[in-house]
Length: 49
Image (cartoon, rainbow, N blue to C red; front, side):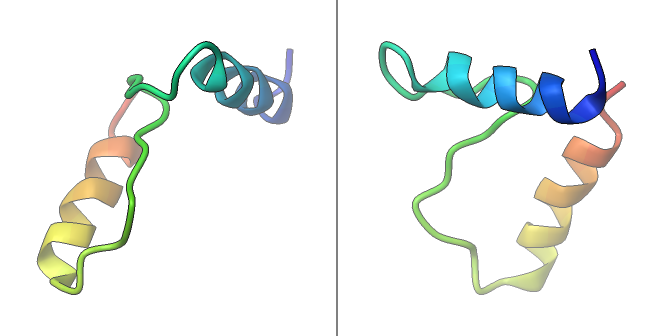
């Protein structure tokens, strides 16, 4: 399974039955206006093995 297929599966799995946070996917209602906080979120996902 390539990265696109894994990403789509992760997205589908997170939508049913109710959206939830996963290690690979984190639902946000909005992006923080604080660039440092946004950088922390991006860094956390980029460091996930």
